[in-house]
Image 1 (cartoon, rainbow, N blue to C red):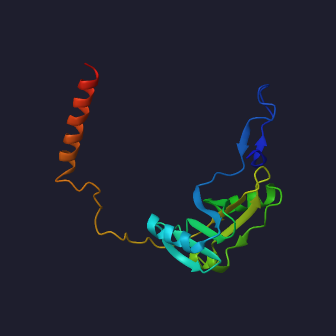
Image 2: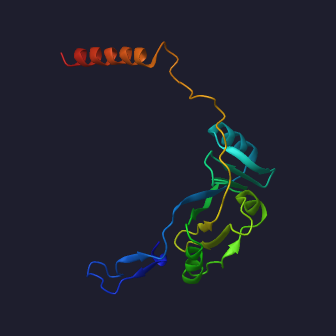
Image 3: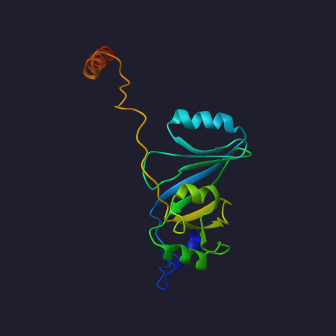
Length: 188
């Protein structure tokens, strides 16, 4: 995103805009936002995909997450036409949010996360965010700081094996011999 970068004064001729330096460094992806016309079907998909629904308002929105701690939600779906709305990235320092607020055109000021997002962030008074619209593609981009939550235990007591043969190696051996037989047969 070119508007998040400052040009260097010692630009080379093949870099007319200057070599870019980022304003901040994103630590990680926090969550993605989508909209979907049928939240009931999306709710079923999210559960079957293996995410845990942490908030569901019928005909309004679904917040879901994985198992990791400090990620209160990773996937947000709003009622609406099917499309990608935007994403949020995590920053390590509160100062990074202030840097974005002061340097990115049309960026919101640093605000406390309120509503369901603030409640799920489980860090009252600390969890903050800024947001702006990417002028190139129109996506909502958010930067968040200070989200906390506990790890969720896995639903499965042990790893699920998808090979139901006597052993993994037995099935592999059969496949391997079949492959060699086909290879020899086709090359003679």
